[in-house]
Length: 298
Image 1: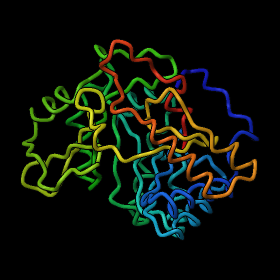
Image 2: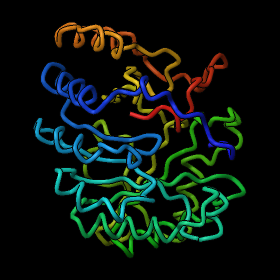
Image 3: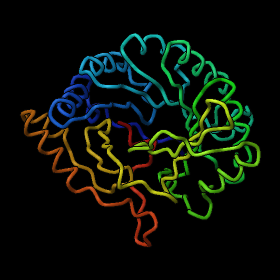
Image 4: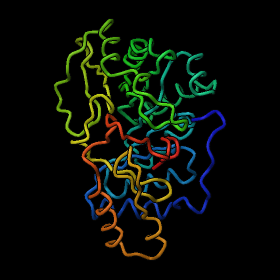
């Protein structure tokens, strides 16, 4: 995010709790959705999150959460009691000074406490998502992996994607999956994991002879678009059929106009029919989405 932050969405543009749950229910009951992940932005700032998680869990689906973990220590038990299955925590460095440089917050201790609380509450396996940035933390991959293995967290490195608010991303500046693996293999023995990858975004590797694994999500250099089975419903009721889509399909308007569940489901299906075969980052005509990752929510 830019240092000055981003504008908040007007309150009336954001789906209320009942609207969120209704759309999730339509997705589950009519469209075959079997897992719901709450992400952002930052989902822990949503006041009704615990109740939304409880009502979503009652639909019989797996529920997970992606968070920066700043408020996780005080909410982990309540989320687990509501039926949340697991959490992914964004953490790019375990060095306090680097964490402060990246996040502009001196709150690494809060993130560590959140991770510990999640594990204690049974929200596992606890996963960590890390992005390496050239000249910032690209020398810290082995350190992050060692730290995660010692605490039984599952680490996933993610290639930096063109979703920044400043639109300053460049392929040349991105730390690639090959570079990440090369850095890790300088200190660890990695073997491809035996478990099938399926539609999961991470390519998994077993670390040494132990049970620990590390994953690499190479969204840019090794796209897995053909296996993608995800759809994003944004906080303001838009369907994005790809994270990099430049178009969105509005379900909020239909919802508030009194549309029946069946009509909303059909609109959702139509939105997905327009999904492209790939995100096209390698295409010279690729344009970054107008919404940055921190404003997509969902």
